[in-house]
Image (cartoon, rainbow, N blue to C red):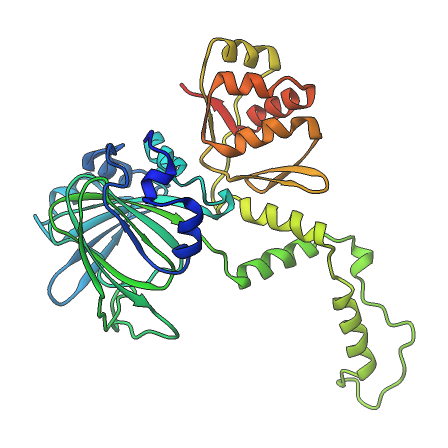
Length: 385
């Protein structure tokens, strides 16, 4: 994982973002030439047996697909056929540090866009059929070989196989047909029809980047507006006039409501702060575990001087705003910060693993040390065990 992002893409990140990101696929042979699987197929299966881990097993025949959702029992894997099935496990980065480290290879994409690392193991012939995703994904091939067929970006409604437990395309005409081997990578923007089928037993790492839709944003913003002071949002009609029918929504009432809604317009700064909270918010059911005892700066300093490495929690995204005031956002929580803490903020947002020397350099200001202590207290940072 030591190669810089430029080498992984085979081009500059600026060129990739200009010519490919959310526009067209890119296949990179040997993108991660020294890539080593951070877990085995057996370990992935063990993860799929745990509570709280989202997983599914997809088996296929010539005429149908079947899906079983986790957590799975150990005997389930012993009863699977030798071919034409796949296990998919979501958010492996939350459970396997090596999978989380893979995200650092894509640090040229903003933190607020990161979704997860899904890992799939497939027996020969295994796959989930031709389909379309609504997110950007980098498909990194681990052990074994997988055949990828992919085509043009779909527009409008697409025909799906009726009665299938997955959103499988009824018609699929790929333009490309490629075999990926260990270390190869395929980038697919949203809406590109594709199908991955195991050529041999294989592991594939899907590094996904989410894009919230407008409906999600509206719903979250409406929740934020509900936090306004009650009096500020109270409907008032002191000039109420008699009307011939009590069921009529009068022009005056409609005008008052329109005025109230338009009066809810937020400033740019308020929208920015809301978006940063929204974009870093924890997924439903997730939480950042807090330490049993809140650490103090002297204890943290001793471990840093000893050279201990610090890691960020995989439960929450890290992001910050730097205009005009500075705010750090972790898992949807907003932390107002002094400008002297900016070097620390930039450091903790830049990588998942943080070296002791870098943290000590960024800790010169009192505000930076106070922020570091708070992040440890929140469970957002912890020392590598």
